[in-house]
Amino acid sequence: MEQNSTFKIGITDSGFGGLSMVSEFQKSYPDVEIIYFADLKNAPYGEKDKSQVQALVQSASDVLIQEDVKAILLACNTATSVAVESLRNHLSIPIFGMEPAIKPALNATENEKVAVLATSLTLKEDRFLSLKNKIDPMNRIISVNCPGLSELIDQEKIDEAIEYVQAILLKEDLQGIHSVVLGCTHYIFLKERLQILFPEISFFDGNKGTLNHIVNTCQIQKSQQVNKQFNKQENWKFITNLNQSKNVQIARHWMQELQTDKYTRAT
Image (cartoon, rainbow, N blue to C red):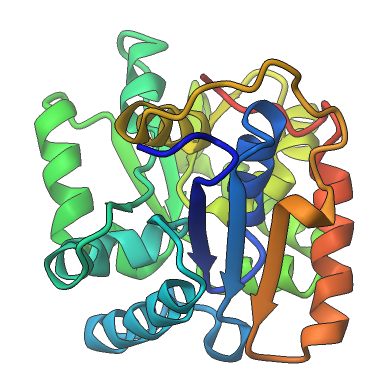
């Protein structure tokens, strides 16, 4: 693959959640150029039907292809679950997706239950069910549908989003769980506060594993000098199809938040 200075990756999500992957890249690989497309006009994806999401992902990918990207990441668990394979058949460049961090969560304990928070479409698709059946023979995973949660986060209603998840984790059937998998990139924005509220629970997400997979596949070399200000505008471009000016400001705000140590992610 090309050197970091010319390698360009496109990242797309229905909203701002995928910015957490932009942050992952720019923290360790600041030379990689990133084009981010937020399909805010059609957000959220999680409650739509499969064919509709596939069409939306194809349209989002067309936007990124016009930017001459060398690879595309669907930084959305829902989009990955329903569209990553069809997109790979359609495009010649590498297409990457997100997987819920179920395996590390299960490996962190021997017998305890693990809750997976995700959208309804993610949880009912064959991709998730096949993964669950393959690595969870003891049926330790509890799938938790979270309709509307990503919308609250896109709207920056973080207090309401925290109350939403807190109510879920306080339910009787989730008492005593050891781990929670954040099965949507949006949910990562809640991770620090959730960890404070539930110090006895380990929270997992798939961002770091996804980054490592892309880096290895595309043979991206780490920069000799890691950029500490990894939200610099010249290294990433934000595109959306709804209120571009307003949402650029929101994206910059999230990136400023993400560059702090408080958004730590499981390896």
